[in-house]
Image (cartoon, rainbow, N blue to C red):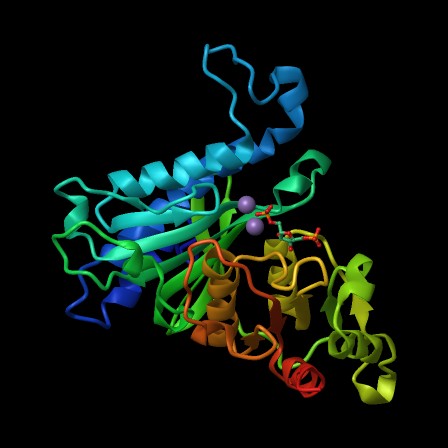
Length: 336
Ligand code: AHG
Ligand code: MN
Ligand code: MN
């Protein structure tokens, strides 16, 4: 049997990247490996999600006598567990948990990273077999190594991220992550259970033809946003158009598509929710980091997302993110 050695696994890739940094400890590779491991476990359950009604509903007891958890709780437990037991992470914060969790055992307090995540994004789409995802963000702690992490370690602006990434549980399962050096995508080869490099050096096209926004909220957006949406609807061939509207309602899938094909994704504030819906720390910052490394841009309408100083773990922010030139055009409208 032939072994295709063009295939590079996630582990091989992260270790090879490390070789350029002689002082690197390998902790980041370890952390990414753990995230990849948790994602594989979540993937197994996502693939069975449609069977939940015949195998037992969330909240009931399964055949092994275990309680069947909702998939987002299951995903949260997997990511938390794998990071707690690994050797690279000193604490986590998650969409599913009110407060951050400090790993205070002797091994974890010596770890240098903290991780924030949305364990299952787009969870309202699970029941209808639409792609969902996981989003994560990694920071170097600011408190001293050897101590228990504090809130300060989590409330860092996005420009301090060391790495960020996401997993799409879609027609293929993909893990995409960015460091300052680049964005790379790995597709899960289910036959061998390995993440394999399938999308090296992802760059977001400078412009595209896709705009993604929830049109149902149109009359709740401010005038500048409405004007820009009208511009998108009226693009002609001579003007880089016509544009097409695509909105799945799973941010991971929507932004992933636009990152690869070129496009713009917006979740503006509405009259009901002036700060929009999406969370700064584990939804917007990781995507803003990935998009910028890939050549694109991300703003809250007034300021670069990555420069926002967070004050709360679960704070929300409006988000506009995508291809560089499309974002620059949008910004002229947002400026009024
Ligand atoms: P979550 O499932 O983690 O709560 O996030 C869902 C988010 C995001 O994925 C998506 O872009 C957005 O909700 C869609 O919201 P609307 O239905 O309001 O457009
Ligand atoms: Mn989410
Ligand atoms: Mn979620």
